[in-house]
Image (cartoon, rainbow, N blue to C red):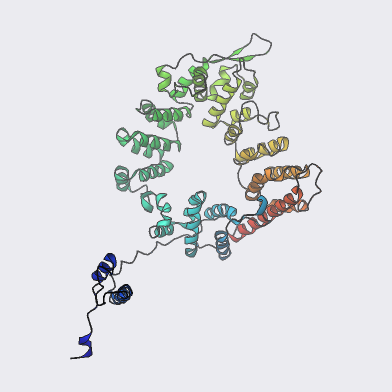
Length: 536
């Protein structure tokens, strides 16, 4: 008999587990004597059995290898730009003491602008940068659209392998599958009939952008069977390419079961000045406003509706006024903003929009009337009325008679041509300073036009020389870092010295302003270099 035949068989794992659960006082471990040494023997046996089990474990069947990532046909990013991308993605916003920042540019704040520039040039993202790019987009939702566009289809391939990046799939219809093209009628029909809601919304938006009539016909085919919340979202997609050919369908939607759907259909129809609804609203609104010539000065008089009848409600007028709002003024405002603005000159004596807005309004109706005209100008994208309601940028009250809030001014500016917006905001800053201009700057094209950029820098310099509290301008300074034209950097050199502080200045204000202008200048020069690296 060999020595090996005298060795005891290893204890079964189940027996060791049982002994551990019951305790060695009640169950002696296999191959051990009862007593004080039993617990140590149990642990020794368990350790030995663990090694034996692992050593004897057979490898599992290998999982199938994933399909290769799709090729990206776009041109490769220039080497210098690829290095810049790595630096932008590696940067993390730091924290400074006392709320002050260093004079170094904030690279993470430049990443959105860099992504916009690279997408405009059509470059492909370097494969090695995709994980960091997806991590950045995961942390900052504002980066996601541009980052995913730059990352391309390979980002979706990676997102299927890492749960942390699933947000990329949620933002892509069909989990990243390409939408059917114009010639794929069968795929379009299948996806529209059987797809998930997000897929159907994306499909409808895609078709609407290239063929508004085809998108509307697709929606009409299933309109009566859609849920109310889905009908509302689908109807909203008609804002793209909205035209007179949509009117019959929108008129039918005025009788929809859902109040929200009816309201949206009415809003879209009122944006079509030639629609039947717009004509009905013009008649109603025309009975509410007239010119009174009995006094020394022609004056607008308002007679608000006394009721909201069924026809008004069908045309989108909400009968229930918000808390704290009078019913008649509520109905009046809705009629005025839905009526075509082009009807008012003829209705009010052939006056121009500027002349109409300049007329006095009786009985404290001015704010309500001009506010409704503001909303109508934005809805109908009417630059002539927007100019009249904005008034001259230097006008007292910082905005003209119809702009009752900064938000409304910004919306009115959005209807003007891009160069005109910049000129108006530049004039506004020159007359009123930067304290109210932040929201208005947000509607101006980037990089800012030269007159606007000069106006912003001059206003910052004036604030510095006046000893103003510096941190109150940190938002505008940060906006300038992203939006000023890089060619403005040379003009900042004269502002880098620490100025003499007036007696009433905030303590340390001069040093802060010097640091802020240094950072602004360095950021502009860095942006110029980044543009050159992209080959522009």
